[in-house]
Image 1 (spheres, rainbow, N blue to C red):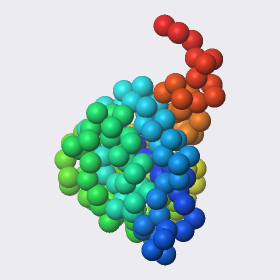
Image 2 (image 1 turned 90 degrees about the vertical axis):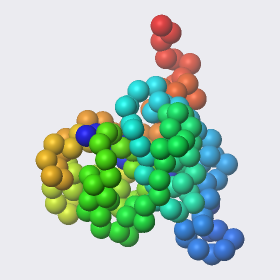
Image 3 (image 1 turned 90 degrees about the horizontal axis):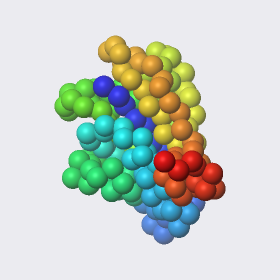
Length: 171
């Protein structure tokens, strides 16, 4: 199984409610989330389901990815992807939840700790930038091989939305 990790795009500094969970994507964050989703879709990742943190900014990023991937009905929320949760919680959940590749949409430091656990097998944290994607092929109980780390600007270029899009060769 491949686990794809997507950190949410840029969000407002403070929600009107004052609650961190209510922070929304900025206009630039919404644009980037759509562009990153399109870039991810170009890779034809074979993702069967999407699991997102219930926080608004993660859900908005996941919605953009689901639309680009043609998977709007395959999106579910999990509190196991909230920022301060133990990464093992989401691993237990996704391995019990079905087969197929999965896209997890969440936050730093949680996704960095999850990525570190999968590729390093320890308390290693591998920081992820906003709107970046990591792909890990899970090979053991909770261990795997990092197949790709794609910054947002690379995904934007792949999807035809980034600065490098005009330099992409035509086919």
